[in-house]
Image 1 (cartoon, rainbow, N blue to C red):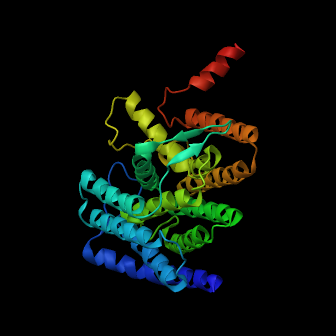
Image 2 (cartoon, one colour; image 1 turned 135 degrees about the vertical axis):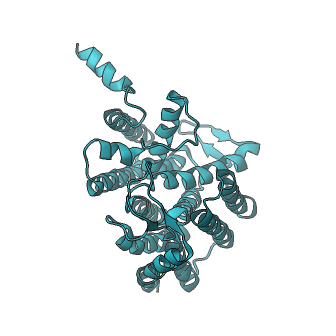
Length: 347
């Protein structure tokens, strides 16, 4: 039954996406090229609606059981409505943030999704107390916007999200969480079907409708899948979503260093830096896919490692991330503390 559902979701995504493309053009939900964007022609940008509809079809066919399911679906509806409005009318950031907060608030306050405490690796418990709800909402909204930030090249956000969702599926299978497994796989398959139209050269963009929806769902499912909260389990979703989280983190560092507003758009994200380094559009996307896959693999290894093994994995990841960031200028052209330190030691 589950395999048949996944096949149905994939076919639905393939069939619905061209219809959404025509619909987006008809109602004017299009992305205009400008100095910040890579594309040079007008593109329909409501593709996330196809991902959502294909996923919802699968959800109602298979009906994975969980007390949290109804609240996740309600939150997803609110996120999708927020994204559609933004794709149509370019709503103000504060309104878009409001939609995200409402959606996250529903799954936190009405559902049972909350980071209450973590068990520390060397003993003891860190209890978040009254901050639990706030931190959980911050995580969901943060991941939602992290996925949105990497949606800058054809197929990039869709591919990275698919890799993250497949990793979540593997982790859910290892942990025996059938609800997260079913939800993650259906979402991955619907996104993969959309990717046939979104990979370079794209025929349609997912828009904020897709980026916000995928980010929201990944943020929620990652917490739901690792609710037996230890320090190790809390780190797993962070590692899995390493690409968008790293890009967002260094965007903040970059803007603080250049004294720009944190919300100020620029052309210095990971994909921009790779393009500026000489990689083609397709090469840059495939390279980021490889990075996302390595983060996913590291997340799986991390979940099976001892405490010291986990610390070693995280340490190696931090060093690798820092080297890549400095080489491509992700935090700014003059940001090279580690490379300068190595050069100093060698002289």
